[in-house]
Image 1 (cartoon, rainbow, N blue to C red):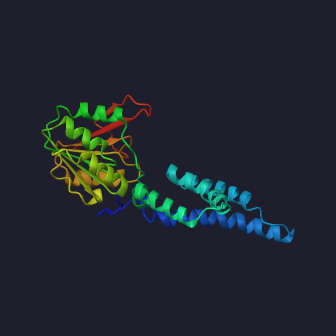
Image 2 (cartoon, rainbow, N blue to C red):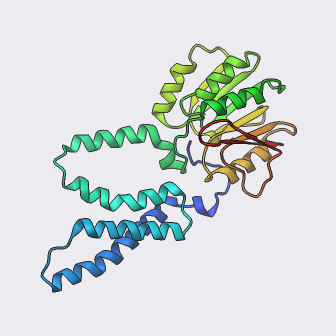
Image 3 (tube, helix red, strand yellow):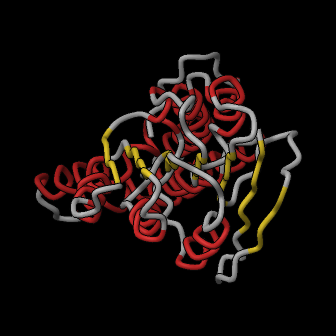
Length: 261
């Protein structure tokens, strides 16, 4: 799930990491700029943990005021306190490296395109399978296919259709590879869905995040044929009314938004 879109990007996705760094640095500068001189004048030791809590609270406020997505707000609120807490633990550096590598393998999409790893619920997979049971189609593609739960299910229920799944995060892709390996009508690949042509797709399914939806809809309108179907799990296309909304019987009260090109 890479952010290598060939078309123009929306302002929110333009240099997102520099923006997040600026918000965190602004919060830290304000808190430390006040607390440090105060402690020096009073000849006191800077209370690092309390200061980190204030930095987290201020960074959360800044990210909320600038309309960042919820996961960025959580990161901003927890980054400084977590840094102070872990710095006081006697943890070998190798564990930090191992944790970083594991997180990158699983959540590469969140780092590169603000698309966390979402797994479609069993209820959503059943609803999608029922929806597509009688839809004339030769090719169905799952963009940002995670661990292959949707692609494998559709390949089993629609033996007459070629099902494709593309995933950008390494570990979910590896799980999906083994999950779909024995399905002859399921094709599994590693890479960016921005680079996948949609012209020959009859149905496009995506469970991503609000971040890429506007640009993805532009890609779908430009490449998909009239009469084909674009389905988004959980996230509407901004300023576009869905042709149908399907309520899913699961704990998350999921909705499938269906758009007919």
